[in-house]
Length: 301
Image (cartoon, rainbow, N blue to C red):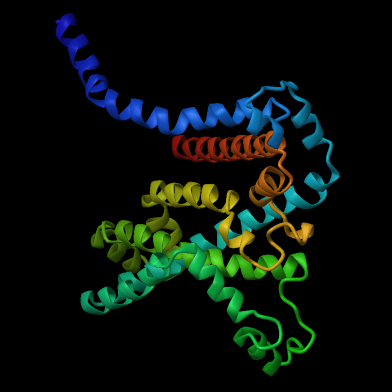
């Protein structure tokens, strides 16, 4: 019996071994290489000559001692990611609730329409938002001017941190909410109709039904979309780098992703850029593990 039990235990791992080896090679090897480069004084000279210059944790000491990290880059990264994740999940959930109320044909039409936002590449979507907020003659700037909220002749939405990241948040949320909407919709369609009808009979309103009936049943789905949105929004790069000033010209709007790129390829300091990438990865792991532990702890209670 023990022999058969051991075989049943080993067989699944043998079947998964090829896929795990491929994934390990594609994911672990680059990560290890980034860590190795972060421990070196790796610049253009080392890249050309192939010589290694180990400096230990000097890059990390320089990084953690940089005032820009604490005053600009880290706040930009964390605050933007928190706001973008919250807005993406909220908007996606509201759209999912709307889709769940529609008839099948109408739901299919609306779903196809919102999928277009997800299908558009991040580069194309970013240029569309830049066009809308172009200083002077951008459609969004002109609309704000017509409402008396801004002066089209003097307003530059990309000049300050707040307005820059407001536009970036609109871009990221617009691109990310379809994934949340469709995922939550799939969960909503599995909620037993009898449970919802019983809550209605008990006098529960729409808000109460959602928090007391729907949300607890869909907690694992909300965990998945929140974790994935957190990972995507913390390491967002394209939507920031392609906006005016996001490529390092305006250092007030740098986040960890763009800062790592600028230090690596604009300053030819690949060791410092790799150290920034490692810090970003560690930060993501801490946040993800912390959120999952909190979620599982609530389920145990």
